[in-house]
Amino acid sequence: MRAFTRLALLGTAGALVATAVGGAGAAQADDGGSGNITIGKVVVNGGKPVVVGTTKTVYAKVSVTASDDSGIARTTYIYADGPGVNFDLIWYDDGDITCVKASATTSTCTGTVTFDPQATTGFVDNAAAATWNLGTSVSANDYDYIHRDAATTFKVQRASKLTVNAAPEPVKKGKTLTVTGKLSRANWEDNLYHGYANQSVKLQFRKKGSSTYTTVKTVKASSTGALKTTVTASTDGYWRYSFAGTATTPAISAAGDFVDVR
Image 1: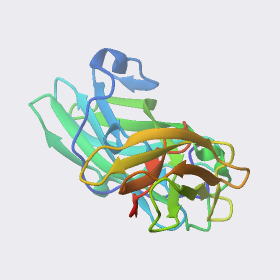
Image 2: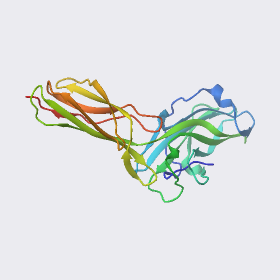
Image 3: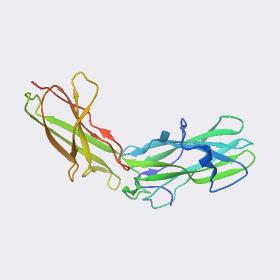
Image 4: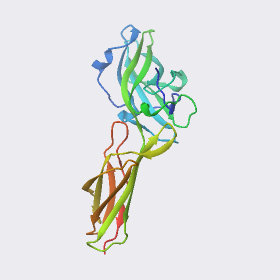
């Protein structure tokens, strides 16, 4: 089934700076085609996961580098294919996919896959936070063509949020400081952020005048994503929580909360 979730993938447009993902050798296995046309580099979102929240449309840039002895005519379409979807979606849009020659035989064609968490069709559930395939079809000037259902893979992740609050402020040296916060992530079924339960989160401290955070302890989030721990106040500085991320949710660090120790 072609890709979707309650983030509707809408179309292709624009351009992208290519980054290598896999080599030309891995690109030779195709799902259909003719002649000696080959696909080399295929990159989605600069090689980084596509992180989608609950309101903003996300535009994932795509590049497809292909070669043929007659030269590349066009990329006919690109499409994304992932889990948690309820209908097929393919974009056949020549006007929004542009191709630039690297040589007489090789071109890089670029476009954009659009993820809209507010779309009213094509959505399903959070199972779409997973590994997706990027499919494409490319044509050469001598009418050779190649089609690949999985020219490369990329991850789609649920956006994360992380807060912190250290109190009291100010605090006397040697007294107890309570650090609270919350780890949450996007839920595409209701377009709200919900607590990310039972995750390990690092409590970190950066001394005033320093640029480096040091991990003080690891705190486990509650069933609602709440974070709470205590430390002994010793010197002025910034406290923050830092989450390493999971396969479905990106890493994130809260902005540091400054505490004046007197």
